[in-house]
Length: 316
Length: 281
Image (cartoon, rainbow over all chains, first blue to last red):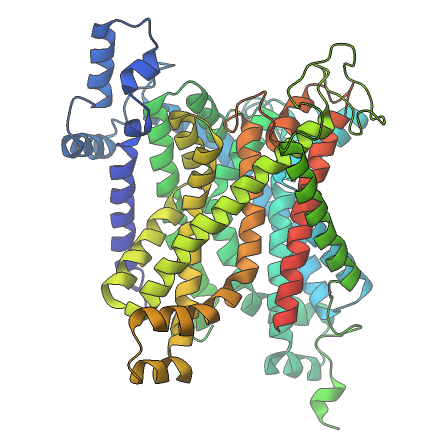
Protein backbone atom coordinates (compact mmCIF):
# COMPACT_ATOMS: atom_id res chain seq x y z
CA UNK A 1 0.00 0.00 0.00
CA UNK A 2 3.07 2.22 -0.09
CA UNK A 3 2.06 3.86 -3.35
CA UNK A 4 -1.62 4.04 -2.53
CA UNK A 5 -1.39 7.81 -2.30
CA UNK A 6 -0.03 8.22 -5.84
CA UNK A 7 -3.31 8.50 -7.77
CA UNK A 8 -4.41 10.78 -4.97
CA UNK A 9 -1.41 13.00 -5.70
CA UNK A 10 -2.38 13.21 -9.37
CA UNK A 11 -5.92 14.16 -8.40
CA UNK A 12 -4.56 16.79 -6.01
CA UNK A 13 -2.41 18.30 -8.74
CA UNK A 14 -5.50 18.57 -10.94
CA UNK A 15 -7.35 20.30 -8.09
CA UNK A 16 -4.51 22.80 -7.74
CA UNK A 17 -4.48 23.50 -11.47
CA UNK A 18 -8.22 24.19 -11.45
CA UNK A 19 -7.79 26.49 -8.45
CA UNK A 20 -4.95 28.32 -10.21
CA UNK A 21 -7.20 28.67 -13.25
CA UNK A 22 -9.98 30.15 -11.08
CA UNK A 23 -7.60 32.36 -9.07
CA UNK A 24 -6.09 34.11 -12.06
CA UNK A 25 -9.59 35.04 -13.25
CA UNK A 26 -10.37 36.71 -9.90
CA UNK A 27 -10.21 40.20 -11.38
CA UNK A 28 -13.35 39.43 -13.37
CA UNK A 29 -15.42 39.50 -10.16
CA UNK A 30 -14.75 43.24 -9.98
CA UNK A 31 -17.70 45.16 -11.36
CA UNK A 32 -16.91 47.23 -14.46
CA UNK A 33 -13.31 47.91 -15.47
CA UNK A 34 -11.04 46.30 -12.84
CA UNK A 35 -8.27 48.81 -13.48
CA UNK A 36 -10.68 51.71 -12.89
CA UNK A 37 -11.99 50.14 -9.67
CA UNK A 38 -8.49 49.41 -8.34
CA UNK A 39 -6.86 52.73 -9.24
CA UNK A 40 -9.83 55.06 -8.78
CA UNK A 41 -11.36 57.73 -10.97
CA UNK A 42 -8.39 60.09 -10.87
CA UNK A 43 -6.02 57.62 -12.56
CA UNK A 44 -4.80 58.28 -16.11
CA UNK A 45 -5.50 55.97 -19.03
CA UNK A 46 -1.78 55.13 -19.21
CA UNK A 47 -1.70 54.01 -15.57
CA UNK A 48 -4.77 51.87 -16.13
CA UNK A 49 -3.27 50.30 -19.23
CA UNK A 50 -0.09 49.49 -17.29
CA UNK A 51 -2.14 47.87 -14.52
CA UNK A 52 -4.19 45.87 -17.03
CA UNK A 53 -0.90 44.62 -18.41
CA UNK A 54 0.55 43.60 -15.01
CA UNK A 55 -2.71 41.84 -14.09
CA UNK A 56 -2.75 40.17 -17.49
CA UNK A 57 -6.14 41.70 -18.26
CA UNK A 58 -5.02 42.57 -21.78
CA UNK A 59 -4.67 38.85 -22.43
CA UNK A 60 -7.51 36.38 -22.91
CA UNK A 61 -8.37 33.87 -20.20
CA UNK A 62 -6.19 31.08 -21.57
CA UNK A 63 -3.10 33.27 -22.05
CA UNK A 64 -3.55 34.68 -18.54
CA UNK A 65 -3.75 31.15 -17.11
CA UNK A 66 -0.59 30.05 -18.91
CA UNK A 67 1.33 33.14 -17.75
CA UNK A 68 0.05 32.70 -14.19
CA UNK A 69 0.88 29.00 -13.89
CA UNK A 70 4.24 29.56 -15.56
CA UNK A 71 4.96 32.29 -13.02
CA UNK A 72 3.97 30.02 -10.13
CA UNK A 73 6.47 27.38 -11.21
CA UNK A 74 9.31 29.82 -11.87
CA UNK A 75 8.79 31.57 -8.53
CA UNK A 76 7.36 34.74 -10.08
CA UNK A 77 4.07 35.14 -8.20
CA UNK A 78 3.66 38.77 -9.25
CA UNK A 79 4.39 41.97 -7.36
CA UNK A 80 2.38 43.47 -4.52
CA UNK A 81 0.65 46.78 -5.37
CA UNK A 82 1.09 48.16 -1.89
CA UNK A 83 4.62 47.15 -0.86
CA UNK A 84 6.16 46.74 -4.32
CA UNK A 85 7.82 43.52 -3.12
CA UNK A 86 7.44 40.15 -4.88
CA UNK A 87 4.33 38.29 -3.69
CA UNK A 88 6.23 35.08 -2.94
CA UNK A 89 8.75 36.93 -0.70
CA UNK A 90 5.85 38.67 1.01
CA UNK A 91 4.08 35.35 1.69
CA UNK A 92 7.17 33.43 2.84
CA UNK A 93 8.19 36.24 5.22
CA UNK A 94 4.80 35.87 6.96
CA UNK A 95 4.92 32.07 7.32
CA UNK A 96 6.99 31.84 10.57
CA UNK A 97 4.55 33.83 12.73
CA UNK A 98 1.53 31.90 11.44
CA UNK A 99 3.31 28.55 11.69
CA UNK A 100 4.31 29.23 15.30
CA UNK A 101 0.75 30.23 16.21
CA UNK A 102 -0.79 27.19 14.52
CA UNK A 103 1.71 24.62 15.80
CA UNK A 104 1.62 25.90 19.39
CA UNK A 105 -2.17 25.93 19.45
CA UNK A 106 -2.31 22.36 18.13
CA UNK A 107 0.16 21.19 20.79
CA UNK A 108 -1.77 22.92 23.57
CA UNK A 109 -5.13 21.69 22.31
CA UNK A 110 -3.93 18.08 22.00
CA UNK A 111 -2.05 18.06 25.31
CA UNK A 112 -5.17 19.18 27.17
CA UNK A 113 -7.81 17.23 25.29
CA UNK A 114 -6.28 13.75 24.93
CA UNK A 115 -6.12 12.93 28.68
CA UNK A 116 -9.49 14.57 29.33
CA UNK A 117 -11.14 12.69 26.47
CA UNK A 118 -9.68 9.30 27.44
CA UNK A 119 -10.62 9.56 31.09
CA UNK A 120 -14.11 10.85 30.43
CA UNK A 121 -14.62 7.96 27.97
CA UNK A 122 -13.63 5.48 30.70
CA UNK A 123 -16.14 7.00 33.13
CA UNK A 124 -19.07 7.95 30.94
CA UNK A 125 -21.63 9.98 32.86
CA UNK A 126 -19.17 10.58 35.69
CA UNK A 127 -18.42 13.99 37.14
CA UNK A 128 -15.47 14.67 34.82
CA UNK A 129 -17.37 13.43 31.79
CA UNK A 130 -20.42 15.56 32.49
CA UNK A 131 -18.22 18.60 33.05
CA UNK A 132 -16.26 17.96 29.86
CA UNK A 133 -19.31 17.20 27.72
CA UNK A 134 -21.26 20.23 28.90
CA UNK A 135 -18.20 22.47 28.74
CA UNK A 136 -17.27 21.56 25.18
CA UNK A 137 -20.89 21.81 24.09
CA UNK A 138 -21.05 25.37 25.42
CA UNK A 139 -17.65 26.27 23.95
CA UNK A 140 -18.71 25.08 20.50
CA UNK A 141 -21.32 27.83 20.51
CA UNK A 142 -18.78 30.62 21.02
CA UNK A 143 -17.13 31.83 17.78
CA UNK A 144 -13.36 32.31 17.97
CA UNK A 145 -13.56 36.10 17.67
CA UNK A 146 -15.79 36.23 20.75
CA UNK A 147 -13.42 33.86 22.59
CA UNK A 148 -10.56 36.17 21.63
CA UNK A 149 -12.28 39.26 23.01
CA UNK A 150 -13.08 37.43 26.27
CA UNK A 151 -9.49 36.18 26.57
CA UNK A 152 -8.13 39.72 26.07
CA UNK A 153 -10.59 41.12 28.61
CA UNK A 154 -9.64 38.50 31.17
CA UNK A 155 -5.85 38.25 30.84
CA UNK A 156 -4.83 41.64 29.52
CA UNK A 157 -7.44 44.06 30.88
CA UNK A 158 -8.77 42.54 34.14
CA UNK A 159 -5.72 40.63 35.35
CA UNK A 160 -3.10 42.62 33.44
CA UNK A 161 -0.87 39.55 33.12
CA UNK A 162 -0.16 39.73 29.42
CA UNK A 163 0.32 42.39 26.74
CA UNK A 164 -2.95 42.83 24.83
CA UNK A 165 -1.52 42.43 21.34
CA UNK A 166 1.57 42.63 19.19
CA UNK A 167 4.31 40.25 18.16
CA UNK A 168 8.06 39.88 18.78
CA UNK A 169 10.03 37.44 16.62
CA UNK A 170 11.21 34.40 18.58
CA UNK A 171 14.83 35.00 17.53
CA UNK A 172 14.71 38.52 18.97
CA UNK A 173 13.28 37.83 22.41
CA UNK A 174 12.04 34.27 23.03
CA UNK A 175 10.35 35.06 26.37
CA UNK A 176 8.45 38.08 25.06
CA UNK A 177 7.52 36.11 21.96
CA UNK A 178 5.99 33.31 24.06
CA UNK A 179 4.24 35.73 26.42
CA UNK A 180 2.58 37.42 23.48
CA UNK A 181 1.64 34.04 21.98
CA UNK A 182 -0.30 32.84 25.06
CA UNK A 183 -3.58 34.56 24.28
CA UNK A 184 -3.69 33.90 20.52
CA UNK A 185 -2.74 30.26 21.10
CA UNK A 186 -5.43 29.95 23.78
CA UNK A 187 -8.03 31.49 21.47
CA UNK A 188 -7.24 29.12 18.60
CA UNK A 189 -6.68 26.16 20.91
CA UNK A 190 -10.02 26.47 22.73
CA UNK A 191 -11.99 26.25 19.50
CA UNK A 192 -9.96 23.29 18.26
CA UNK A 193 -9.84 21.53 21.61
CA UNK A 194 -13.61 21.47 21.99
CA UNK A 195 -13.97 19.66 18.67
CA UNK A 196 -11.08 17.27 19.37
CA UNK A 197 -12.40 16.37 22.80
CA UNK A 198 -15.83 15.38 21.58
CA UNK A 199 -14.40 13.37 18.68
CA UNK A 200 -11.80 11.47 20.70
CA UNK A 201 -14.22 10.80 23.56
CA UNK A 202 -16.71 9.24 21.16
CA UNK A 203 -14.05 7.14 19.43
CA UNK A 204 -12.56 6.00 22.75
CA UNK A 205 -15.96 4.86 24.01
CA UNK A 206 -16.28 2.73 20.87
CA UNK A 207 -12.76 1.31 21.32
CA UNK A 208 -13.43 0.49 24.96
CA UNK A 209 -16.30 -1.77 23.87
CA UNK A 210 -13.94 -3.81 21.65
CA UNK A 211 -12.70 -7.25 22.80
CA UNK A 212 -9.10 -6.09 23.26
CA UNK A 213 -10.25 -3.64 25.95
CA UNK A 214 -11.83 -6.51 27.91
CA UNK A 215 -8.73 -8.61 27.37
CA UNK A 216 -6.51 -5.83 28.66
CA UNK A 217 -8.60 -5.37 31.82
CA UNK A 218 -8.70 -9.11 32.46
CA UNK A 219 -4.91 -9.17 32.29
CA UNK A 220 -4.92 -6.57 35.05
CA UNK A 221 -3.95 -3.44 33.15
CA UNK A 222 -4.28 -0.23 35.10
CA UNK A 223 -6.48 2.57 33.79
CA UNK A 224 -3.44 4.40 32.54
CA UNK A 225 -2.03 1.38 30.68
CA UNK A 226 -5.44 0.55 29.24
CA UNK A 227 -6.18 4.06 28.00
CA UNK A 228 -2.78 5.13 26.74
CA UNK A 229 -1.45 1.82 25.39
CA UNK A 230 -4.60 0.05 24.23
CA UNK A 231 -7.26 2.66 23.52
CA UNK A 232 -5.56 5.82 22.28
CA UNK A 233 -4.10 4.44 19.05
CA UNK A 234 -7.19 2.69 17.65
CA UNK A 235 -9.32 5.70 18.63
CA UNK A 236 -7.13 8.31 17.05
CA UNK A 237 -8.01 8.18 13.35
CA UNK A 238 -10.93 10.63 13.63
CA UNK A 239 -8.82 12.90 15.81
CA UNK A 240 -5.95 12.80 13.31
CA UNK A 241 -8.31 13.57 10.47
CA UNK A 242 -9.60 16.57 12.42
CA UNK A 243 -6.07 17.76 13.24
CA UNK A 244 -5.22 17.42 9.56
CA UNK A 245 -8.25 19.43 8.52
CA UNK A 246 -7.61 22.11 11.10
CA UNK A 247 -3.94 22.41 10.07
CA UNK A 248 -5.04 22.55 6.46
CA UNK A 249 -7.62 25.28 6.95
CA UNK A 250 -5.60 27.02 9.68
CA UNK A 251 -5.18 30.04 7.41
CA UNK A 252 -8.89 30.80 7.72
CA UNK A 253 -8.79 30.64 11.51
CA UNK A 254 -5.63 32.69 11.83
CA UNK A 255 -7.28 35.42 9.76
CA UNK A 256 -9.41 36.29 12.77
CA UNK A 257 -6.90 35.57 15.51
CA UNK A 258 -4.05 37.43 13.82
CA UNK A 259 -6.27 40.47 13.29
CA UNK A 260 -7.40 40.39 16.91
CA UNK A 261 -3.89 40.13 18.32
CA UNK A 262 -1.99 42.07 15.62
CA UNK A 263 0.30 39.17 14.68
CA UNK A 264 2.10 39.83 11.39
CA UNK A 265 1.33 36.45 9.82
CA UNK A 266 -0.40 35.27 6.67
CA UNK A 267 -3.83 36.11 8.06
CA UNK A 268 -2.92 39.75 8.58
CA UNK A 269 -1.30 39.85 5.15
CA UNK A 270 -4.56 38.59 3.67
CA UNK A 271 -6.69 41.07 5.59
CA UNK A 272 -4.54 44.04 4.62
CA UNK A 273 -4.30 42.85 1.00
CA UNK A 274 -8.09 42.57 0.88
CA UNK A 275 -8.47 46.00 2.41
CA UNK A 276 -6.10 47.51 -0.17
CA UNK A 277 -7.51 45.31 -2.97
CA UNK A 278 -3.96 44.14 -3.60
CA UNK A 279 -4.98 41.57 -6.19
CA UNK A 280 -1.60 39.87 -6.80
CA UNK A 281 -1.17 39.23 -3.05
CA UNK A 282 -4.75 37.94 -2.73
CA UNK A 283 -4.20 35.55 -5.63
CA UNK A 284 -0.91 34.40 -4.11
CA UNK A 285 -2.46 33.78 -0.69
CA UNK A 286 -5.38 31.84 -2.16
CA UNK A 287 -3.07 29.61 -4.17
CA UNK A 288 -0.68 29.17 -1.23
CA UNK A 289 -3.57 28.27 1.06
CA UNK A 290 -4.90 25.77 -1.47
CA UNK A 291 -1.45 24.15 -1.72
CA UNK A 292 -1.36 23.81 2.08
CA UNK A 293 -4.82 22.23 2.14
CA UNK A 294 -3.88 19.71 -0.53
CA UNK A 295 -0.51 18.95 1.05
CA UNK A 296 -1.95 18.40 4.53
CA UNK A 297 -4.72 16.28 3.03
CA UNK A 298 -2.11 13.89 1.65
CA UNK A 299 0.04 13.94 4.81
CA UNK A 300 -3.03 13.24 6.97
CA UNK A 301 -4.00 10.24 4.85
CA UNK A 302 -0.49 8.80 5.07
CA UNK A 303 -0.25 9.34 8.84
CA UNK A 304 -3.68 7.81 9.46
CA UNK A 305 -2.88 4.74 7.38
CA UNK A 306 0.34 4.28 9.38
CA UNK A 307 -1.23 4.76 12.81
CA UNK A 308 -4.43 2.88 12.06
CA UNK A 309 -3.70 0.23 9.40
CA UNK A 310 -7.34 -0.85 9.51
CA UNK A 311 -8.18 2.24 7.47
CA UNK A 312 -6.31 0.74 4.50
CA UNK A 313 -8.55 -2.30 4.44
CA UNK A 314 -11.74 -0.31 4.54
CA UNK A 315 -12.75 -1.79 7.90
CA UNK A 316 -12.89 1.54 9.65
CA UNK B 1 -23.55 -14.07 34.24
CA UNK B 2 -21.11 -13.71 31.39
CA UNK B 3 -17.58 -12.66 32.19
CA UNK B 4 -17.92 -9.59 29.99
CA UNK B 5 -20.72 -8.30 32.23
CA UNK B 6 -18.41 -8.29 35.24
CA UNK B 7 -15.74 -6.24 33.50
CA UNK B 8 -16.70 -2.71 32.57
CA UNK B 9 -14.39 -0.98 30.10
CA UNK B 10 -16.82 1.93 29.99
CA UNK B 11 -17.78 2.71 33.58
CA UNK B 12 -21.14 4.22 32.83
CA UNK B 13 -22.90 6.12 35.60
CA UNK B 14 -25.71 7.27 33.33
CA UNK B 15 -26.83 5.70 30.04
CA UNK B 16 -25.62 8.68 28.00
CA UNK B 17 -25.22 12.40 28.38
CA UNK B 18 -28.49 13.66 26.95
CA UNK B 19 -29.91 17.00 26.11
CA UNK B 20 -32.63 17.59 28.70
CA UNK B 21 -36.13 18.21 27.37
CA UNK B 22 -36.16 21.65 29.02
CA UNK B 23 -33.10 22.58 26.97
CA UNK B 24 -34.84 21.68 23.74
CA UNK B 25 -37.91 23.73 24.68
CA UNK B 26 -35.84 26.74 25.78
CA UNK B 27 -33.73 26.56 22.61
CA UNK B 28 -36.78 26.42 20.35
CA UNK B 29 -38.44 29.27 22.23
CA UNK B 30 -35.29 31.39 21.98
CA UNK B 31 -35.08 30.94 18.21
CA UNK B 32 -38.79 31.71 17.74
CA UNK B 33 -38.67 34.81 19.98
CA UNK B 34 -35.54 36.07 18.22
CA UNK B 35 -37.06 35.48 14.79
CA UNK B 36 -40.25 37.35 15.76
CA UNK B 37 -38.25 40.21 17.30
CA UNK B 38 -36.00 40.46 14.24
CA UNK B 39 -39.06 40.52 12.00
CA UNK B 40 -40.61 43.25 14.15
CA UNK B 41 -37.38 45.25 13.91
CA UNK B 42 -37.29 44.91 10.12
CA UNK B 43 -40.93 46.05 9.95
CA UNK B 44 -39.84 49.21 11.79
CA UNK B 45 -41.42 48.55 15.17
CA UNK B 46 -38.21 49.41 17.04
CA UNK B 47 -36.13 52.60 17.14
CA UNK B 48 -34.29 53.38 13.87
CA UNK B 49 -31.02 51.40 14.14
CA UNK B 50 -29.11 54.10 12.25
CA UNK B 51 -30.50 57.13 14.13
CA UNK B 52 -27.79 59.02 16.02
CA UNK B 53 -28.96 60.69 19.19
CA UNK B 54 -26.19 62.76 20.71
CA UNK B 55 -28.27 63.31 23.85
CA UNK B 56 -27.93 59.62 24.73
CA UNK B 57 -24.32 58.62 24.06
CA UNK B 58 -22.91 55.40 25.58
CA UNK B 59 -25.81 54.98 27.99
CA UNK B 60 -26.03 51.79 30.02
CA UNK B 61 -29.05 49.54 29.49
CA UNK B 62 -32.33 51.16 30.57
CA UNK B 63 -36.04 50.80 29.85
CA UNK B 64 -35.81 53.13 26.85
CA UNK B 65 -32.72 51.36 25.50
CA UNK B 66 -32.78 47.75 26.80
CA UNK B 67 -29.25 47.02 25.49
CA UNK B 68 -27.93 50.56 26.06
CA UNK B 69 -26.59 52.91 23.38
CA UNK B 70 -23.25 53.13 21.56
CA UNK B 71 -20.81 56.04 21.22
CA UNK B 72 -23.00 57.62 18.53
CA UNK B 73 -26.13 57.31 20.64
CA UNK B 74 -27.59 54.54 18.52
CA UNK B 75 -29.89 52.00 20.16
CA UNK B 76 -27.95 48.72 20.56
CA UNK B 77 -31.18 46.69 21.02
CA UNK B 78 -32.54 47.77 17.66
CA UNK B 79 -29.15 47.34 15.99
CA UNK B 80 -28.79 43.83 17.43
CA UNK B 81 -32.22 42.82 16.15
CA UNK B 82 -31.43 44.19 12.69
CA UNK B 83 -28.16 42.25 12.89
CA UNK B 84 -30.21 39.16 13.73
CA UNK B 85 -32.27 39.63 10.57
CA UNK B 86 -29.10 39.92 8.47
CA UNK B 87 -27.77 36.70 10.05
CA UNK B 88 -31.11 34.99 9.48
CA UNK B 89 -31.11 35.94 5.79
CA UNK B 90 -27.57 34.60 5.32
CA UNK B 91 -28.37 31.39 7.22
CA UNK B 92 -31.62 30.72 5.36
CA UNK B 93 -30.18 31.50 1.92
CA UNK B 94 -27.26 29.20 2.67
CA UNK B 95 -29.54 26.33 3.62
CA UNK B 96 -32.10 26.86 0.85
CA UNK B 97 -29.72 27.65 -2.03
CA UNK B 98 -26.59 25.80 -0.91
CA UNK B 99 -28.53 22.90 0.55
CA UNK B 100 -30.96 22.75 -2.37
CA UNK B 101 -28.29 22.67 -5.07
CA UNK B 102 -26.03 20.43 -2.99
CA UNK B 103 -28.71 17.84 -2.26
CA UNK B 104 -29.84 17.76 -5.90
CA UNK B 105 -26.23 17.30 -7.05
CA UNK B 106 -25.62 14.59 -4.45
CA UNK B 107 -28.79 12.67 -5.28
CA UNK B 108 -28.02 12.97 -9.00
CA UNK B 109 -24.51 11.64 -8.42
CA UNK B 110 -25.80 8.87 -6.18
CA UNK B 111 -28.46 7.69 -8.64
CA UNK B 112 -26.55 8.12 -11.90
CA UNK B 113 -23.04 7.23 -10.66
CA UNK B 114 -20.44 7.31 -13.47
CA UNK B 115 -19.75 10.73 -14.92
CA UNK B 116 -22.15 12.55 -12.53
CA UNK B 117 -20.29 11.02 -9.63
CA UNK B 118 -16.93 12.09 -11.03
CA UNK B 119 -18.07 15.68 -11.60
CA UNK B 120 -19.53 16.12 -8.10
CA UNK B 121 -16.54 14.39 -6.54
CA UNK B 122 -14.09 16.68 -8.26
CA UNK B 123 -16.19 19.77 -7.53
CA UNK B 124 -16.12 18.79 -3.86
CA UNK B 125 -12.34 18.30 -3.94
CA UNK B 126 -11.78 21.75 -5.44
CA UNK B 127 -14.12 23.55 -3.05
CA UNK B 128 -12.66 21.84 -0.01
CA UNK B 129 -9.14 22.86 -1.04
CA UNK B 130 -10.20 26.49 -1.32
CA UNK B 131 -9.64 28.60 1.80
CA UNK B 132 -13.34 29.42 2.24
CA UNK B 133 -13.14 32.48 4.52
CA UNK B 134 -10.47 34.10 2.32
CA UNK B 135 -12.38 33.40 -0.90
CA UNK B 136 -15.68 34.61 0.54
CA UNK B 137 -13.97 37.77 1.83
CA UNK B 138 -12.27 38.30 -1.55
CA UNK B 139 -15.40 37.87 -3.63
CA UNK B 140 -17.51 39.98 -1.28
CA UNK B 141 -14.87 42.75 -1.18
CA UNK B 142 -14.30 42.78 -4.92
CA UNK B 143 -17.96 42.47 -5.92
CA UNK B 144 -19.10 44.96 -3.29
CA UNK B 145 -20.52 43.88 0.07
CA UNK B 146 -24.29 43.45 0.00
CA UNK B 147 -26.56 40.93 1.69
CA UNK B 148 -27.22 38.95 -1.54
CA UNK B 149 -23.50 38.71 -2.42
CA UNK B 150 -22.57 37.63 1.11
CA UNK B 151 -25.35 35.05 1.41
CA UNK B 152 -24.82 33.55 -2.03
CA UNK B 153 -21.03 33.30 -1.63
CA UNK B 154 -21.38 31.57 1.74
CA UNK B 155 -24.10 29.37 0.22
CA UNK B 156 -21.77 28.31 -2.60
CA UNK B 157 -19.36 26.86 -0.07
CA UNK B 158 -22.13 24.80 1.53
CA UNK B 159 -22.92 23.01 -1.76
CA UNK B 160 -20.10 20.41 -1.81
CA UNK B 161 -20.63 19.14 1.73
CA UNK B 162 -24.37 18.82 1.13
CA UNK B 163 -23.59 17.05 -2.15
CA UNK B 164 -21.22 14.57 -0.53
CA UNK B 165 -23.51 13.74 2.39
CA UNK B 166 -26.65 13.38 0.28
CA UNK B 167 -24.74 11.27 -2.24
CA UNK B 168 -23.84 8.68 0.40
CA UNK B 169 -27.40 8.80 1.77
CA UNK B 170 -28.70 8.21 -1.75
CA UNK B 171 -26.35 5.28 -2.30
CA UNK B 172 -27.77 3.43 0.70
CA UNK B 173 -31.37 4.28 -0.14
CA UNK B 174 -31.06 3.34 -3.82
CA UNK B 175 -30.58 -0.32 -2.88
CA UNK B 176 -33.72 -0.43 -0.70
CA UNK B 177 -36.63 -2.51 -1.92
CA UNK B 178 -39.12 0.29 -2.43
CA UNK B 179 -36.78 2.04 -4.86
CA UNK B 180 -36.04 -1.15 -6.77
CA UNK B 181 -39.74 -2.01 -6.92
CA UNK B 182 -40.62 1.49 -8.16
CA UNK B 183 -38.00 1.18 -10.89
CA UNK B 184 -39.15 -2.29 -11.87
CA UNK B 185 -42.73 -1.07 -12.12
CA UNK B 186 -41.47 1.50 -14.63
CA UNK B 187 -41.62 4.69 -12.57
CA UNK B 188 -39.99 7.65 -14.27
CA UNK B 189 -36.63 8.94 -13.02
CA UNK B 190 -38.36 12.05 -11.68
CA UNK B 191 -40.92 10.00 -9.76
CA UNK B 192 -38.23 7.78 -8.25
CA UNK B 193 -36.32 10.89 -7.25
CA UNK B 194 -39.21 12.82 -5.67
CA UNK B 195 -41.32 9.97 -4.26
CA UNK B 196 -38.79 7.31 -3.31
CA UNK B 197 -35.33 8.83 -2.80
CA UNK B 198 -35.74 12.42 -1.56
CA UNK B 199 -38.13 11.50 1.30
CA UNK B 200 -35.38 9.22 2.56
CA UNK B 201 -32.50 11.61 1.99
CA UNK B 202 -34.00 14.75 3.54
CA UNK B 203 -34.38 13.41 7.13
CA UNK B 204 -30.78 12.17 7.02
CA UNK B 205 -29.69 15.69 6.07
CA UNK B 206 -31.64 17.41 8.88
CA UNK B 207 -28.84 17.55 11.49
CA UNK B 208 -26.50 18.88 8.85
CA UNK B 209 -29.03 21.55 7.85
CA UNK B 210 -28.95 22.77 11.45
CA UNK B 211 -25.14 22.67 11.53
CA UNK B 212 -25.10 24.70 8.33
CA UNK B 213 -27.42 27.33 9.82
CA UNK B 214 -24.93 27.76 12.66
CA UNK B 215 -21.84 27.74 10.40
CA UNK B 216 -23.38 30.32 8.07
CA UNK B 217 -24.19 32.63 10.98
CA UNK B 218 -20.65 32.31 12.34
CA UNK B 219 -19.18 32.82 8.85
CA UNK B 220 -21.19 36.00 8.36
CA UNK B 221 -20.16 37.12 11.83
CA UNK B 222 -16.48 36.49 11.12
CA UNK B 223 -16.75 38.29 7.79
CA UNK B 224 -18.35 41.40 9.28
CA UNK B 225 -16.03 41.25 12.28
CA UNK B 226 -13.06 41.48 9.91
CA UNK B 227 -14.75 44.40 8.16
CA UNK B 228 -15.53 42.58 4.92
CA UNK B 229 -19.24 42.09 5.58
CA UNK B 230 -22.07 44.56 5.46
CA UNK B 231 -20.63 48.07 5.43
CA UNK B 232 -21.11 50.09 8.60
CA UNK B 233 -23.41 51.69 9.69
CA UNK B 234 -25.52 48.79 8.39
CA UNK B 235 -25.88 46.58 11.49
CA UNK B 236 -24.70 42.95 11.59
CA UNK B 237 -23.67 40.90 14.63
CA UNK B 238 -20.02 40.61 13.64
CA UNK B 239 -19.85 44.30 12.79
CA UNK B 240 -21.49 45.33 16.08
CA UNK B 241 -19.08 43.16 18.07
CA UNK B 242 -16.13 44.71 16.23
CA UNK B 243 -17.43 48.28 16.62
CA UNK B 244 -17.93 47.81 20.33
CA UNK B 245 -14.35 46.63 20.86
CA UNK B 246 -13.07 50.22 20.88
CA UNK B 247 -15.64 51.11 23.58
CA UNK B 248 -15.26 47.99 25.75
CA UNK B 249 -14.08 49.86 28.84
CA UNK B 250 -16.75 52.56 28.64
CA UNK B 251 -19.69 50.67 27.16
CA UNK B 252 -19.20 46.89 27.30
CA UNK B 253 -22.85 46.35 26.35
CA UNK B 254 -22.18 47.44 22.75
CA UNK B 255 -20.10 44.32 22.17
CA UNK B 256 -21.63 42.20 24.93
CA UNK B 257 -25.26 42.01 23.83
CA UNK B 258 -24.70 41.16 20.16
CA UNK B 259 -22.05 38.61 21.21
CA UNK B 260 -24.49 37.10 23.71
CA UNK B 261 -27.28 36.91 21.10
CA UNK B 262 -24.86 35.29 18.65
CA UNK B 263 -23.65 32.66 21.14
CA UNK B 264 -27.16 31.88 22.44
CA UNK B 265 -28.42 31.45 18.89
CA UNK B 266 -25.59 29.10 17.92
CA UNK B 267 -26.09 27.21 21.20
CA UNK B 268 -29.82 26.83 20.54
CA UNK B 269 -29.23 25.54 17.02
CA UNK B 270 -26.63 23.08 18.35
CA UNK B 271 -29.04 21.91 21.05
CA UNK B 272 -31.72 21.19 18.44
CA UNK B 273 -29.19 19.40 16.22
CA UNK B 274 -27.94 17.24 19.09
CA UNK B 275 -31.52 16.48 20.13
CA UNK B 276 -32.36 15.42 16.58
CA UNK B 277 -29.31 13.13 16.43
CA UNK B 278 -30.17 11.53 19.77
CA UNK B 279 -33.79 11.04 18.73
CA UNK B 280 -32.68 9.25 15.56
CA UNK B 281 -30.55 6.70 17.40
